[in-house]
Each structure stands twice: as structure tokens, then as C-alpha cells.
Image 1 (tube, rainbow, N blue to C red):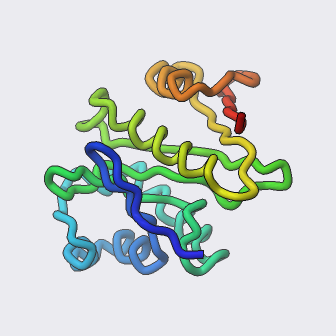
Image 2 (spheres, one colour):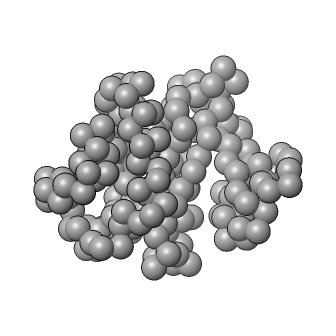
Image 3 (cartoon, one colour):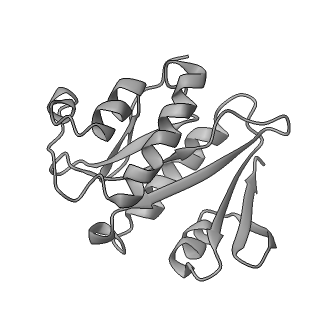
Length: 170
């Protein structure tokens, strides 16, 4: 199953391929031009560099992106990457997919986290075999908690560090 870009009001979400993720990790600047993007010194940031090996491992399991892996978050206005978001794999036996997102510090508090989380949640809930989207955030991350609440997610539980969230179909 191939997956297309997701377009929102201000963002373009582009699914990572293995080639794209490896090229970015290896600091190959041609990959940006090949995707029609402008390179910036702000992304990949340290968090993205630490995440790229996980993205590559997930993609190696499926080959071509299915949409249940990771996506680059791109500003429509100047075609620069400002973060990454996505899921940790295909739905589990209960039909759950786990959402995560990261926006570079310079672009936080502008509503991009909400925009990408909403787009990916809506996309996921339209897919077969998906019954719910889960997420988690650190207890002190009030920005993420607000985003997840605004998405309509319900807190399911907490531990010493994290708050766990879920939204179900219907």
C-alpha cells in the first residue's frame, strides 16, 4: 500500500522512505532538493538525529512506507522541514496505533503541533483495522497535553513520568 502526502492549511506531511531517512542521517544535502524542499540548519535537530535510526528500522520492516511509520513535517510557505511525526508501526491486534510528533523549538507555540497531530489522527482513524489512536507525553509537557486534549483524546492513565492518552472511533 503506497501512501501520499497529507496537505493541511500550513503544512505538507511527507512520508519518510528508507532512502530519505538514510540520506538525511548521512547528511546528504541532495535529498532535500530531490524532494523539492529547502534545506535549513534547524532540522534535523538533535532529537530528529536520534530518532532517524528508529525510523529506518521501522521502514526496513515494511519496505515502502505504509503511513504507519514517520512523516516529515514541512512548512508550505518555504518548503522547509520543521519536524517529524508519525506512528510506531501498523495497528496492533486491538487496532491501536501510537502517535508521536516533534516540532523544532524555533517553530513551537505556533499551532503546528496541533495541525500535524490532527491530520495524522484523522488519517489513521480513516484506515482499515484502526480502532483507536494512542499517545503519551511527559507529565510536565503541558503543551502536548493540551494538544492531545484538544484532539479529543482521553487520559487513560499515568505513571511517574508519563500521561497516556487515547481516542477511539465513534
